[in-house]
Length: 242
Image (cartoon, rainbow, N blue to C red; front, top):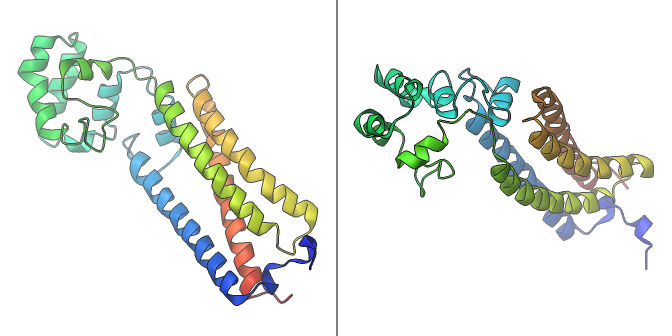
C-alpha cells in the first residue's frame, strides 16, 4: 500500500480525476458568481458607478453626517428608484422637519409604497430593511452607522462556517500537489487567516473607517488564494507529469 506522501494528483485514476476536476470547477464558478453578487449588491452604495472602497466604507461605516434613509436616496444606491422629480426632496424635507407620523402618512408613505415597498417588505429582496410602516421607516431615519451588529453576526457565522469548510476540502486536495511542503503549508493556512481577518475588519470598520482598506486587501488576497487552491490541482492532474 502506498504511503500518503506518495499519493499525487497526477497519478490518480481517471474517474477520480474527473470527479475532483468537476468539483473544483464548480467551486470556482460559484466563487465567481459570489463576486458578481458582491458587485451588484454594493456597487452603487456611494452613488458612483463601479465597486470601490467608497462603497464599502458607506456600507460598513455608514454616513455619520446623515440618516441612513437620506444617505441612500440622496446620491446613494436608492436614488435611482425615485425617478419622479420632487419625491426625493419631499422625503428629505420630512426627515429634516422631524419625521412626524402625520407627514409620513400624507407624503412619504405613498412615495415608498410606489417605489420601494416591492423590495423592502418582509418577503422581498430587501426584507432585512422593511419600509411598510411608520415604525419600520423610523429605524432608517436614525444616523447612518453602517451595518448593524445583528446583521454582521448573521452573515459572519454562516460565511465563516461554510467558507471554512470549503477551504478545508480545497486544502486536502491541494496537499496532494508536488509543491514544496513549507510552501503548501503557507498556502493552506493563509485562506483561513484571511477569512477571519476579513470578517473581523468588517466589524471593526464601524469604529475605525480606515480599516476598510485592510478589509478590501484581505478580500482580494482571499480570492487570489482561492484561485491558487483550484488552479494548481487542476494543472497537476491534467498538465503536469508525475
